Image (cartoon, rainbow, N blue to C red; front, side, top):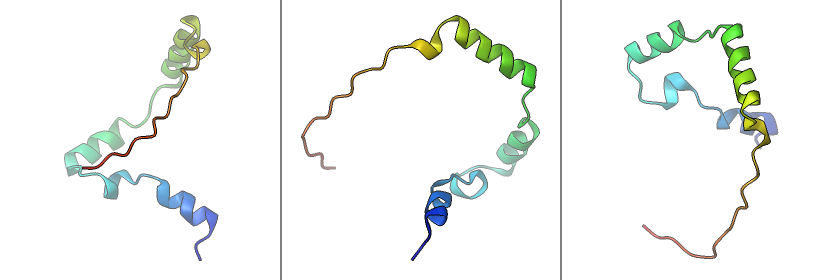
Length: 69
C-alpha cells in the first residue's frame, strides 16, 4: 500500500524525466531558473493594481454527456 506522501509525490512533474526536452532545453531552464525577487514583487504589485486578484469567479457548469474517441 502506498502512502499519501508517495501518491502526492507521484503527481509532481519531473521536468528532466516526464517531458520530452533536449539537453539544450534543460540547460536553458537551469540557467534561467532564478528570477529577480524585485521583478516578481513588481509583477505582483502590477497584478494587484489591475485587480487581478479580485476577479469574479466564473460559474462552472457540468454537462451529463459521454465522450468517446
